[in-house]
Image 1 (spheres, one colour):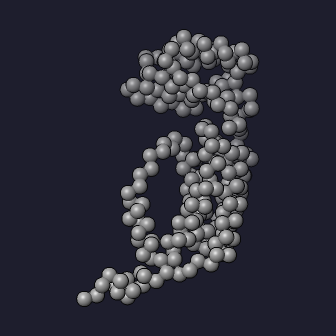
Image 2 (image 1 turned 30 degrees about the vertical axis):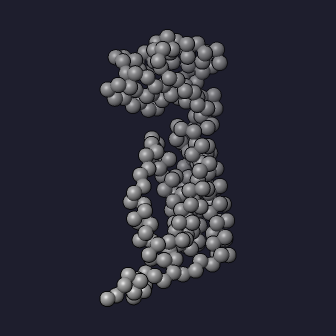
Image 3 (image 1 turned 90 degrees about the horizontal axis):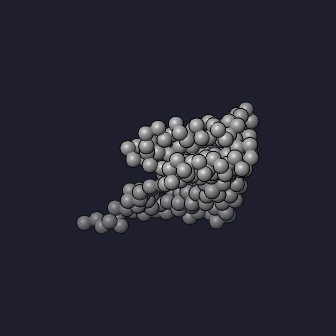
Length: 225
């Protein structure tokens, strides 16, 4: 009777190729370079309203990790099958609220896949075209002035609470725009782009918002983040 080892040998699953160390190091250097470039592109031209620097700081690690995994499993089909089984028990529960964040994460994974599979030229060409598109789109996209801030407000849902918040902001801001509003039966979360003429106006606005709802949570983000 044929053993498992014999079956693997006959099917080619047991055979494994050796990864050239110099080629692996070369791909690692390219991965680091592309990750740094992508990080700068996302911080400079991204439009996500979360802290872009925090997310972008993980791009290089994600690319290197993906590349390392693909480099290892491509040397053996048996390892590839084992990876499929291992990934089936992993669950990612990090909330991605901005579609742009997901697009950049997929781009990181694509770079890692390409370099891990030794498709260096195709990866470089593809990345160059995508980077060029990001640069052109960012060049022609109007960004918020540096005096603007992102104001994130979270609290228990009440009748007319969002309308009252907008009135308070309009009384103290030069301009205010509602960028995102999420509501359910219990809570709400609103994100505004506001231009406060002075820090005193910002302080007064915060006090009035706190008087409107003492349990309200208010977060102010610099638009350059």
